[in-house]
Length: 387
Image 1 (spheres, rainbow, N blue to C red):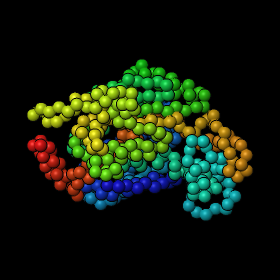
Image 2 (cartoon, rainbow, N blue to C red; image 1 turned 90 degrees about the vertical axis):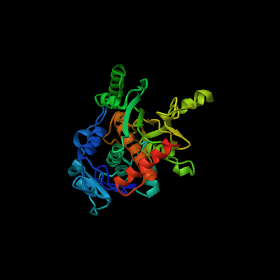
Image 3 (spheres, rainbow, N blue to C red; image 1 turned 180 degrees about the vertical axis):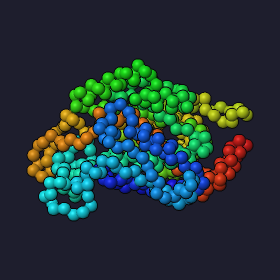
Image 4 (tube, rainbow, N blue to C red; image 1 turned 60 degrees about the horizontal axis):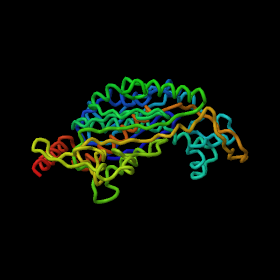
């Protein structure tokens, strides 16, 4: 499978096209839009989330509730477009037109200056409009489609926030369904109510100071069969693909699997997962410190991935920058932003990982229809059982 997205943060709409999705998959529109709604929630979000109530419409590839095997076209309309029609219109305007709301002061931590230099754009709005995290709307939408394919085979996706600012919560090893239920009720997507209160207080304090907060989010994928990904080429390792997908999310700066960087502090005897076997369960691991991967392939244990999100770059107490026209020092221009988007970033991370797992699933059990995939999976599971 593959997909492309298009559209700007203040443009008329965001668009995605998915190619290679199998036929005869029941696509639940409510589940699709539920993921978009989850992305907009979370304590610390800005005013944009009060304006945009994202709903995806399907413009191709689905008929009578089932995928046809043709490319799936998804569209999300930007409700705020009516206020930006002159600024973001496609028609030519005079170079000195004030309605363009030209941006000439790059914001530290953003793509503004690098993108302006790379694409030779003297109006940095042409960079920030596309590099904005608003683009992740369509990555959540495509991930929501992928999740429905995974659900057909009993594969579940969950997430939780581990840290916001200097407030850290102990990882909760709960049944996936219970973890989903509890975190959905939390404005910062944590299980621990005491930590939740501390995180909310930390977000409030940062907002009062005109500052922002980052954090750590964790995603768990349960029910994945052994053998997704491959060791035979570097670019076929599924953990590598997931790592790239996580780091492609705006503001993400690190990723780890299982015990992750903690492995550097331990001896090997306290890092690697012992292999067990019973006739009832087959091969399994005593522990899951590897986070579900060995040699770039799934082990059959839970996939456990954590991502580090830096504090959002747009500050209401802006940092110093330089005017690209005059080269004089100014404080950076301020665009509407969040104080903390870590809970929402966890939802994005869930969906970009779901896409990679679904893609690897199809690579392993490929077929043009879901019926063909079921047959291929059943044959493989029987092969594993008889190994």
